[in-house]
Image (tube, rainbow, N blue to C red; front, side, top):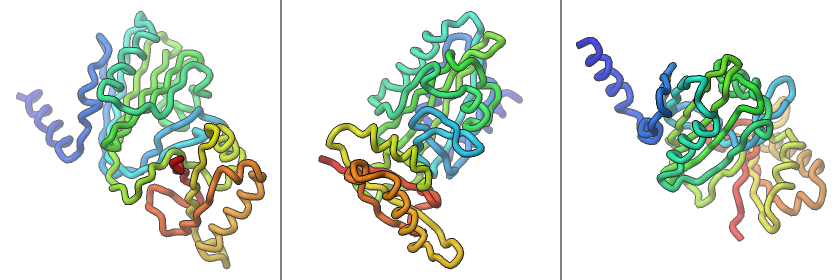
Amino acid sequence: MVRFRKVLCLFAFFSGVSFAGVLEITPYRDAQLIKSNAQAEQLIEIPLSKIRKAGSGWEPESVVRLKGDYFTSLYKIDRNAVLSDVYAHYRAQMLKQGQTVLFECESRSCGSSNAWANDFFSDYLLYGADQNQYLFVVKNAQDIYQTLYLNRRGAGDVIVRLDEVKSVEGRDTEFEIVAQMDAQDTPRIRRFLSDLPSGQHVVGFVTSQRSGPLGAIESGDQLISSLSAGLGNQLNEKVRFINLADLGRESLGVNRISFVYIRP
């Protein structure tokens, strides 16, 4: 009876939040659920690149920042499991409904495992050797994002983290944000623009806030002016900046730039 009541409480907790994708993913054989958590209407960052040193901390070069309903689960798998088989098991299921791959990396191309574990996911259990990690991010047509991160720890067992975020913000534009970053991080913005396919152009929506004697609009103009000067003529041709000042959505953040593709 106690177990039955716990199950009822669990379903009642999830009833207001839809997490069908993660809940329908079959765990790898003998995987043990360590913990899970669900939160409604949280500001979440979805990683779209490797993690790098940024100022005094670490963060992915590019993210999508959105407000959504959030669910995460953490599994432990026996040390005898083949790491590539575990990854293939989850990857195949995350693509079975025709999801779009937003980012994928493995081994050292993902960056520092310690940074992913402690700086981004805030969970030391994910830490392992850099060469043993995988990261996979997808999105479906309903704006549901799924993130998979796994690594083999020093003790030999495999730790798997599955995150799912469903955006609660309706689209009010035909465009889709493809990357977000600090508007003052010129090196990262340069890399993003340099890596765009030939002929692809973007719009960069810049958010800002009042700063001393400068209002939000003036601060945004200053950010754009400084950024344009740091990009050079060739990269400036790939982007058109729009100053949103402090009129953007909460998920766009402050002093950030959000890129959308211009369709050819």
